[in-house]
Image (tube, rainbow, N blue to C red):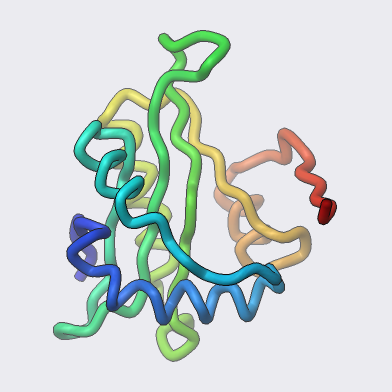
Amino acid sequence: MIRPIVVADVIDQILPMIRENWAETGFDFEISPDVATYAAMQEADQLIAIGAFDGGEMVGYSTAMIGGHIFNPSVIICQSDALFVRKSHRHSTIGGRLMIQTEDIAKHRGAHFMLWQTRAGTPLAGSLLRRGYEPADVALIKGL
């Protein structure tokens, strides 16, 4: 089952998945989610947060920021913050269903565009292309 979540209420369930995600993506800084900012964004209706559950266990989640583009606030953008499904459940349709529900919520809340970020060449990148997404920008990273 996929349903809305309040990040602050389920952070203990999400944190192990964030660590799994970081181990897979190769980010090399300490995980320390800013729960207060998540809470403030949810309170301000600027965050979409949904969880996928198998029984009572959370096995995946999607979080996305939504709001007016800074160059034109009347253009509503929804940008994924995180999409993750535990390895034990990746053989299922959970990841795709999380994506679709995130998009549906964004559209219902007035978004004109949905942006997802992923590493090039990942299964998620391929899935996004098959779902009609097009490359728009290139993100480059460098440690300072």
